Image (cartoon, rainbow, N blue to C red; front, side):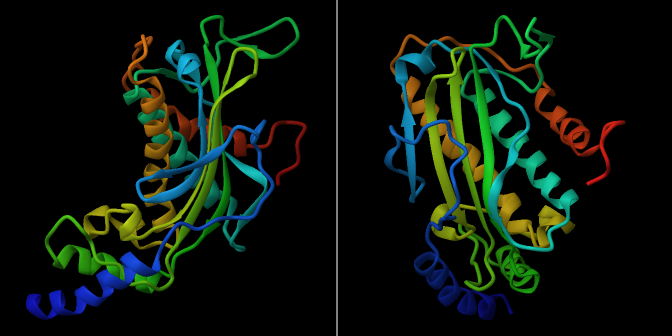
Length: 269
């Protein structure tokens, strides 16, 4: 049975690696500027990106509010708001953890308010703003087949049935204290082998077989793309090194839930 599975998996693996490539969502940008973006490549995916090495090297503390959904995001219909909130939580956690590994003290919340009513922290060096630009759901049936094959076929690559593959688009930027853009990336991908997206095994639990399984997998791929951009920009610089306290990135579930909870003067959405 295993031999037969391997035989069947080979053409699937080849097809997945050749047919699936980066995707794009033609939506208005949420970035403060796109003038300095240049074509780049992150783990075989074409991206647009920019980074100011000197400015990033001087940053140690970053404010990362929860990832948002862009106002004109290209999202498959019929996705419940709660499911979109799940995507926001996953992305926020993944970006937080990746920037923490890059040597930043990441803050999900700010501690004070200025006289003008704006939130602030005196020691914040910059702010990360990230927004989902697009979501394509995966087909549950073909995703399940792919993941079961991934469990059955040993090796570093997991075969993927090249049908009904989900996709995610995200863009993010880092702004300094004056609101000047010091890093930015526009990124989108389908969940396929060539991009390194996804861990397709049944060990992922029941969420691995939902119609947002691919999107959830791709969340960490985006976070790595942003983190790699920053790491490369800071490499060789006299860099400020800080740490994110353990457990910090777990705060995003409550923060996103609070976003979704109507206030006393707001009608339910």
